[in-house]
View 1 (tube, helix red, strand yellow):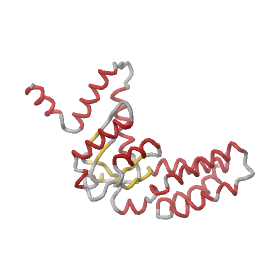
View 2: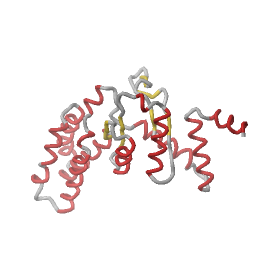
View 3: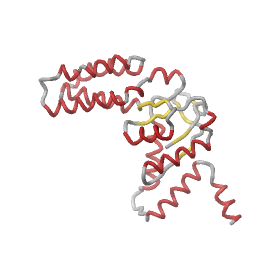
View 4: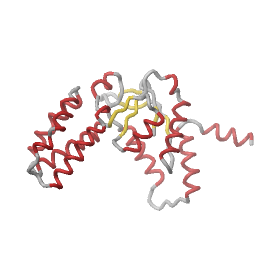
Length: 222
């Protein structure tokens, strides 16, 4: 997980957003303990002083259970790229190999979703199953699963309103962080014992969170 203040972001000359300063938490084990650690790190970084708190993540149920447990007052935002992928999955179930038809169906919905029309998108999806009764059971089940996905995240689709407040609509920074940690811990030829991996992970977090000097100060005191 990463934690940052919205004001700690900048833009490149091309207009691309980047985060000037962010803090990290990582844990190998049960989600409950990860949630506890993430919440503690957020408190260190000023959670109680924040006027608004946002949780931006993909659709995994365990993440949103954690958010409800530890950040119950936060505004949840479903990563827009995951939402787009699920809309495309529904489109391809509807139109099969007819990519042009799938594109004509999905692109207006994506536009509405990103520009304040999420209620219309949900309404269209809700009535979708009645319109595809002639499809096979497997395809209907896949479409039903996709529709239920959006219904379960209906309060996390307000992209235009959260974007107007400065909140990112996607979890790209988190995806990048996952890739960095994967690269650090799963390089070719690397093998870790569980204790060794745990210790290295703690050192990696200390380095990223500017806590490195504190480790050596504690060591010298001991």
